[in-house]
Image 1 (spheres, helix red, strand yellow):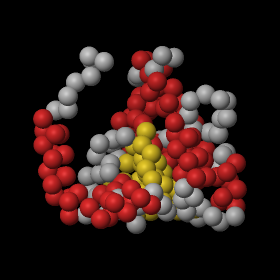
Image 2: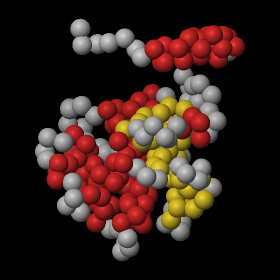
Image 3: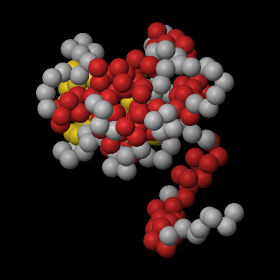
Image 4: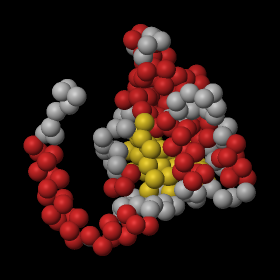
Length: 215
């Protein structure tokens, strides 16, 4: 495969630095994790955005969090059609195999995926409406949230969509029979979080008051 190239030199240097310091200083821990396998208690579905690092937010050690990342931290509805479903497969593995006790949908401010959906629904991104757009068809998952946005300027409505799309994902999780059963027998709890990147704040969805509140 002649189209595959060597790693950039700066990544090679960073790896060598990590191997000589972090790995060497924690070699026994890495050995235990390799031998025992993973046993995370928490699964997080977060955005691919490079500014959102769940392990940093929660100060998590290796093996603590089972993380799946995709565009705009979306979860589709349960659809057992025999086709390829990466996010649904990750959710199934986390819940049914790893038996995680908590499943978090983590959204964030300034989400490019949410902006794309907003622009697409407003008629300003015709390329995303094309059937050939993988991103556009993925963002269709949050279209129902766009229809219910409150009045306001574009900035406030986009932020409202960031939070509303988290609720869409939480609602879609409940269409998975194994999720619904786990929730009903209290073996798993679902959580919705939104991170303000610039201020370093987390907000959590409060189902009683039906709003996001600061942690």
